Image (cartoon, rainbow over all chains, first blue to last red; front, side, top):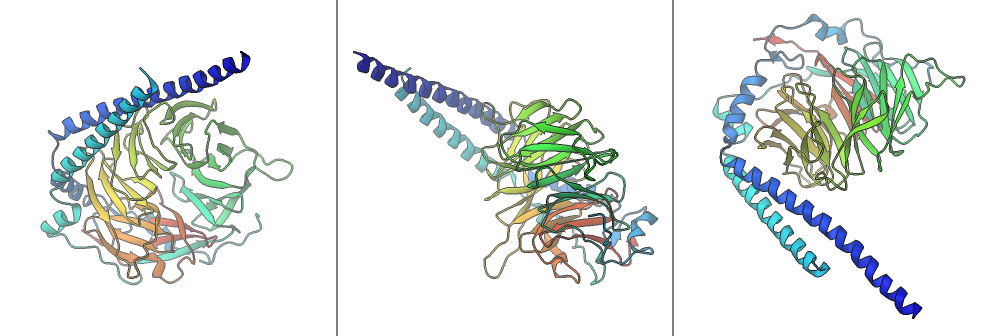
Length: 97
Length: 377
């Protein structure tokens, strides 16, 4: 009968769509698990954080920094342009808007 | 295989994944034999100290009539573009405080803006899910508006952040509420690559921020509502190179460290963190205790040019200056004279590192520079 056929269709079609979605999600999870296992294997050979900290210290202290009170040189005179003949610090109110 | 069998396999795969994540977490903890602050102290380092008039507000850029949401400096010294709730981009000469352009946007709901490397164009994006490009040399139309020169359409959610690839006016990267980042060819307006999304491994929440490595422009970091930051190689869109866990809330802001081998993050959980991209280690947490346990979210971060200072803007208007090596807050710009009167929404360093610009919900932008006595070692 027609109603039985349409009922059958309704029960078959959503189930197929659900299956494909779950399969795609499953594949994604399995791939993610492979990536995580790779990362876990890489950790066996990884250096500890202290090595990275040591590198950080040496890098930070070698570069001149205009915002530090104590800094490596060379300095640049243009660093101080913000304080040379500065306009009214309350800002421009020109009518561009 | 039946649906039920598939569902069972799905559950088993989820359990395997959780177990692997747990193992990774435990193994990483064992490798964290120190953090930056403890290591620096063991090497006899002492914190940066600022005098009361060292870092000062030397400009206030007034002109927006709504909250400032985003700002970006040009690679050459002095120009800034800002985006506001008032539906405009303003281009400023930050040295003279003058406005050179005021661009009325077709969609007022803007969230991000960026200058192109040449300084000739600006990009912006927001709730319209589109990244719009404006050429600043194009004559204005009859209404006095700068016309859009390109619209980058393809995101299925809001555009939260955009950045041009360094030295390339032709490519930029956007992040979006649709959980993806996209690398665009600005000339054609087409997507070159989509990072994450429905059929690829990527973020599982809105992506809020993106930062491209200045030393290796193929690499970029994204920060997301899924509490992670991810490192991407722009040649490999199918999966992130590495995922960085640690935060307990949305990652609102990500920024590469000056040397390109580390990056910082700022989060809704109130902390900023420093991660190493080659090892994946979380090197340091920058967390300020608050008396009333009400910890304001970090909205935006930036590093000084040496990396010694981390600037972190907070939702309560504070702007902490962290000594990155000693993990000590050495100054709060929010407590200084002439500071902002509202949430700090964005901040960025000038190209030469001599000035910090902060943008706020109080509608202003402010320029901060070092006006004290500088000792050269």
